[in-house]
Length: 173
Image 1 (cartoon, rainbow, N blue to C red):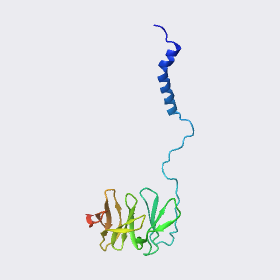
Image 2: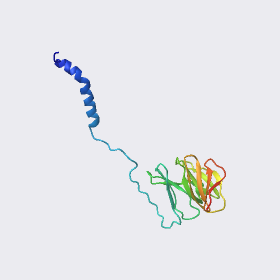
Image 3: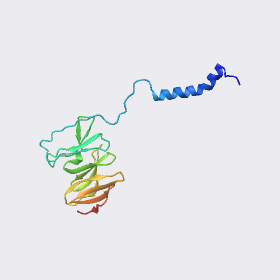
């Protein structure tokens, strides 16, 4: 056998040289590398709560909105503020509200309003009744992705569908 000519050698080595070059390009990219963004940067938020009776603050599930009340009086409502903004807006249907918590998608807040558990649309402020509440102390609740709401009433835990319905006891005090 004879040794391959220079042209034959290049022809045989070309696929290997190409693979080696592509591998090196993947391992050592050119240009400045932009670091991956792991989440929103630091956001500072403040409001004067020195005179507040019971201020409550809840961050939306996606971390972009803040719902809060300053608890100055029973007449106060729930305010919504985008963390990227300096302006907060009152959800008009929430004046004289009790506790509140977010829906899993962040489009609604569940709020205790005048003896009822209501879902309040964060965009429009329109509320709809989920359930009528008994005359007992309401401590708060949670709303899961399956549309089930658990709410603490007088020390007991009750469940109701986010679509609306009757309260069903889950856990007694």
